[in-house]
View 1 (spheres, rainbow, N blue to C red):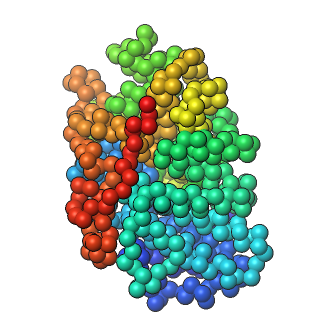
View 2 (cartoon, helix red, strand yellow):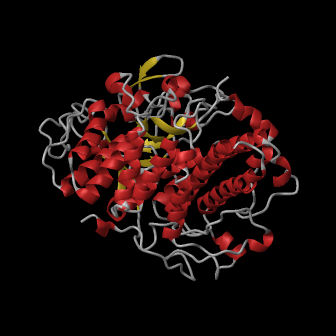
Length: 538
């Protein structure tokens, strides 16, 4: 049975999937003691599997990657108008907002579990090579969660061991210190398997790919390019091409799970350890919620089929705006008049812009990419894996980083063109300047990686969030009114909105004079290196 080891372990080690009230809280008395459980290698392997279960429990990582991170960008709006997804995108949140403390609590809870594992693994009698592999996997998981914390809050407290009640009051570390800690964890990659037999486990490629992402976001371009190049040199991964130009869509489908483009994903099992992401994404008329609605701005980002932006295209027709476009547009987004196939295999046309439609959303658009009707089940717990890192991102990480530190050489062109050619798009124009190449890479990241939870970080690290996250947001052009749907107005204050506030209840617990606040949300203020640094893009 698919990944049955996760199921078994979920039954015998439940204390690692319970939720702590505070991010630094020690284990409840009802849990097995840390020391008593780690008796042999089998215990250690099971404990590590339970640590991987943090990607599954409570659907939290899915909520943030599928719904929150995408909504907190200029690509999407969430159908639940008054939800924290939209209020955060509109810049109207405070230090006591639910999302603010929930993400902090969860990520630190998962980090604590990694620390428990790392604190006990050396007590187990087992082969040294196996121990080093398990340690490297736990460090990869810890690094993944710390990176999320840094992107959300900036510098955060580095906690690298389970803490007692007397050790809870620790201050924040500087952002660069946390990044160095993350990179140190990821530098354990030599002990990871090249291609793990158990799918969903961290590999050399996963650690190096995450390292390239972390370094790229911190403007350490040469190091980022080197990490991405190391992934490419492994010779394990490639762009998925089994379904021709449709492979961009089908690589996310349940029939193509664990393909050679997938570097790291969340492994689900239908009904037993399934995910609700297909419920969230699929159309209302297909028993889904249609919760994620793309905006007109992401639709406009897709070029024409000749590789020209639509505002300078000679073949773009505003009266027939979906004709002669980048094929990824129809593979990523469902629009008024799109053809879809439901989970029973029935093909039909959907209408999103009439008052009588049963697919009414906010924008007139829905997500097709990542929403595989074949994986949708009436019990609502889909077995479709969710990809967190894939090879196309590595290629684009490499291209961006290499262009920034040395300019657009042939390797930069090769990386970007490989992604474009997969769907039948033409090569980039020759002889681009560094600045021109930068803009083409940014556009390519936006369309290739759309709805994968990365855009919110891209617009912040590039320093363009104030330009793209301020003002009204629009949905599709409604042919019945001849007006684009006005959804809401958003606000992005660069003085504070690049980072979220530190949760106020944590500051009340730890002490506001110890756990300092980010600028714009209260005092005392945490002084750190300014991020982002758009001046590096000169």
